[in-house]
Amino acid sequence: MAFRWLLMGVMLLSGLASSPASALPLHAYQQDRDLAREAHAIAVQAAKAYLFEGKKPKGQPAGIDRRLKVPGGAFVTITLDGKTRGCWGTVHPQRPFLAQEIAVAAVKALTVDTRHRPISRHEWPKLEFYVSLVGPLEPVSNAASIRPKYDGLFVTSGSRGGVLLPGEAKTARWQVAECRRKAGLKPDEPAMLFRFPTVVYGPEDVI
Image (cartoon, rainbow, N blue to C red; front, side):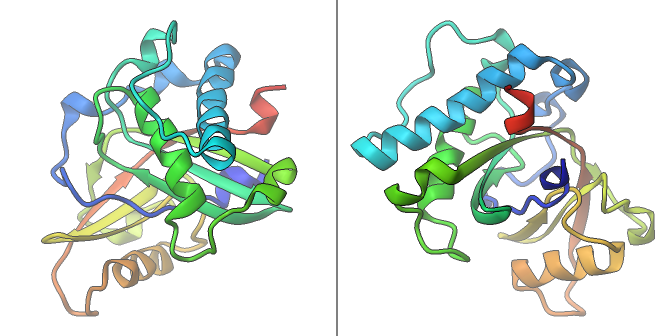
């Protein structure tokens, strides 16, 4: 599905150092239709509850898969007619459980992605949701080694950072430049680069 390579996100800037202890072992999250349905449903239900009832995510859903009860980074992208309407997420977990991370990201994708106007109720029937789970961050010493189709990129300097998910960039050079731009960095300003993989759950995974 093309949307797997058209995801874009905004990240929270707390907890920037790479933390293997909180990195998801993505091999355990691949090719599992039941898990995909569950993670996707968490995003959709959280967004719907907020949009129609004003309810913010609280706690974690009952009876969820144990793999959603661990900390992990996640993004939620919402599309309309094949175009991004909102996206939000974190490369590092901000909450105790991945399920909570997904729910909060879904609500923020509705409301706080400054690149787009807030999503309205009348758009709901045509919205599609994509959940991206973030794998371990790996330092990058040579930008030419980045594979934009497969590698997400996080560029950071001090408290500033910018991120692109896998597939948004066609070239490594543009990927680095765009992440630096999103972070508000000058062309010659020193920065650290980290690549990361993702597992994406979209509408085609929950049918």
